[in-house]
Length: 220
Ligand SMILES: Cc1cc2nc3c(=O)[nH]c(=O)nc-3n(C[C@H](O)[C@H](O)[C@H](O)COP(=O)(O)O)c2cc1C
Image 1 (cartoon, helix red, strand yellow):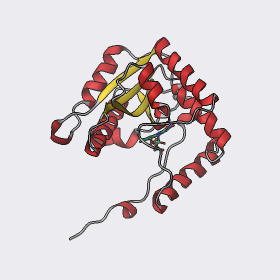
Image 2 (tube, rainbow, N blue to C red):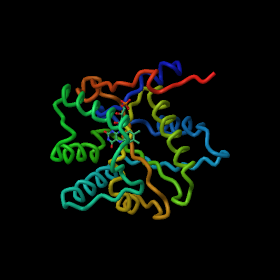
Image 3 (cartoon, rainbow, N blue to C red):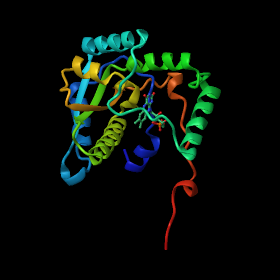
Image 4 (tube, rainbow, N blue to C red):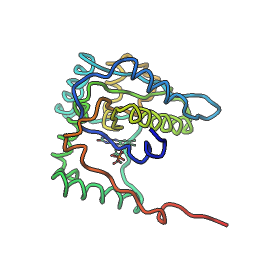
């Protein structure tokens, strides 16, 4: 797949076929993503792929924590507020999603439902967690973000779908303990991966982007 087409056609996939992805294909995609650039080539990324009973056990644990009212405690704090231009884009996204799917993410009861769908990995056969030593600087978080985008693009180019999920880090300590990830690591992102279900209404919603003039400037 051409790189431009790959970047422009990637989207978050939230409806998956049950069919598992062969281990070799997952290994290939991760190996491709490891070509991402990083500060001084430090490569500050660690990846765990969760499948089968292990994944189901994690879903059960996360839903139990949510239902018991356990406060979330991600290693990267959830933003409490946003500057006006970013907030306007978020409000626009929520309004469009409500209009097209009826899902109102400003309603706390719907957010609980949405979190459960996240914790079920949207029905994907595999979950992926990205983490790194917590003592690393903010540059390493930046590097892990680059890795995440490469991973999603490599997956897309190989016919797979992914969605990045901050919600999967809500109970970071519990996830790390369950997956035997050292407590000295910070859990940065969870993602679902599998073959996209083209018939799923969840995959029919395409997010808009701000116009060029709003984001870029040429200084001469
Ligand atoms: C760091 C990060 C965290 C995200 N967390 C979630 C999440 O918890 N659940 C979810 O469904 N989507 C999540 N998303 C997906 C975004 O909603 C999505 O990327 C955005 O709306 C743009 O849509 P697109 O990915 O289809 O282009 C997250 C994306 C990023 C980059």
